[in-house]
Image (cartoon, rainbow, N blue to C red; front, side, top):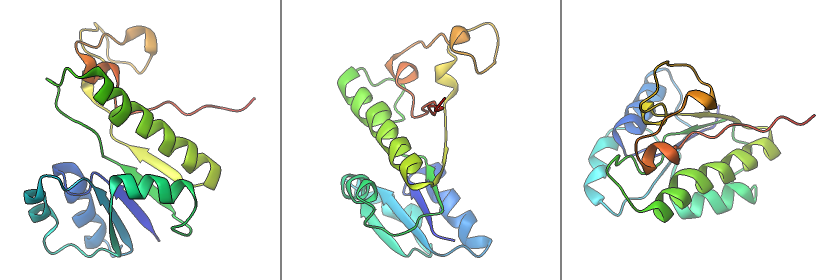
Length: 152
């Protein structure tokens, strides 16, 4: 099984990589932005088949240059709930995720992603329904989660 983990050097992504390794999945492509080079420590001891910068991965994956990928675990996003730069959040958390979803659909690759409780914000009920979403900040408004389109 060939797996991609975006946000692989972050807390959730790195634990996912180590968990995949623990069940015998070693063909893992780690994807992240290592501008903060200290995050490499989270992947110490991990078995990876490749490591790609996030910008390189998204372009190459969309062009089908990485071969058959069975599943993408999408954990990559700006997770700072205090971030106020709406353009950054739009590009990084929404457009990037939407482009990945489109590429996965085109290639028949499963996409599993982490969403955030920030999307539900100040709602009175916890159900995955757009009418119940009450985001309290731009992070909740542009979540890393995207809703798949269904062709009619």
